[in-house]
Image 1 (tube, helix red, strand yellow):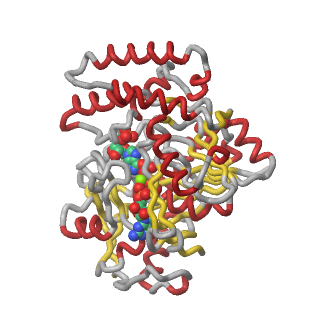
Image 2 (tube, protein in one colour):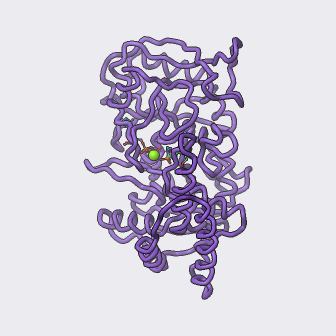
Image 3 (tube, rainbow, N blue to C red):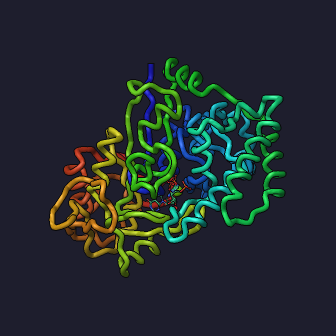
Length: 421
Ligand code: GDP
Ligand code: IMO
Ligand code: MG
């Protein structure tokens, strides 16, 4: 019996999960998303072309892969069908390659309106949500009101949809918010119909059956650990468990069936949306990271906030995810920096702490350790031995502090720009 391996983000999302999953897919048969929804934007680059996936697992372009959207995911049929059409233009019919959990919840047009109304009402305190309806959909899930993919097949679907929509209208009336869902609702109903050509599955049975038959399965996370609903920088988080624990609830796999946990981080740090970010840089260095790293959101196009690597937050994420190996992304972005910093502790109220505390807002000042930059182009490196010494020292420090080996290093956006150790 096989165990399920996991790839997930250890920072505030956008670590490069899409690229890594695409690179690793030839070693697996099944790729499964376990949480999040179209708030995710996972970029893949190959054959000189870029692709952004939101709901479909990043294994979809590899021959013979099976891609599962698990029960923990929330689905907007319009966004999913748009994505499927774009994929099919490039890769042909994917009907046989995509399976959708019947237990996955549906994002209704009114969930999107509720997301927008709630954010607008928050004013300056807004989360910076992607406005895809994620929060309201998970609220209806835990509130036991939600509609699921499997419900599409029920003769009462329309009736249940209308009842939930009316409930949402009632909630929306409490906001000073103008909206019109007529056009989107039409597209939504058409997309729901279009989805019927895919296999709706009991993903928990299917995934466990794969594992029982020694079929290798890779779970693909969305967002990152610091956006986790329980352990992220609450309330500036997303509404799901983005960590390894989410694999169990989002796919129906038992904790003792989890194998390798591959934690991804950028060689520096970014965040999009509001909320604490202790190592954020507001100076030219931050701007350079943004420009060189093309740090603009894959889903919303918003500029990402940039800063140095935060080892305190990284160790926190490594601990709670049970990370067995690390993957360092976007190393090439640091090529030209003369000095590179890593936060190893925080100062808070005159005290120094080396853990990620409950009080994680502006009261934290990072304590940095400086490293000399490698100051050369590493994009063409394909063997670890060929990296400059300064680069290897940077990696060795991260390994020593986290207690985890860095097994994969990414040196550019393309599928081929990768160093496996
Ligand atoms: P995800 O959400 O974790 O899949 O990450 P995103 O796709 O949102 O953001 C990662 C961005 O970095 C994308 O534009 C990728 O094409 C790009 N990228 C991934 N790996 C590397 C790398 O090693 N170097 C550079 N320069 N860009 C990379
Ligand atoms: P991937 O999978 C980066 C952020 C939003 C906002 C907060 C809540 O591409 O790494 P939500 O729409 O979930 O209500 O937004 O979380 N966020 C992400 N940031 N990458 C993502 O996904 C994100 N998904 C949500 O910017 O701050
Ligand atoms: Mg992304």
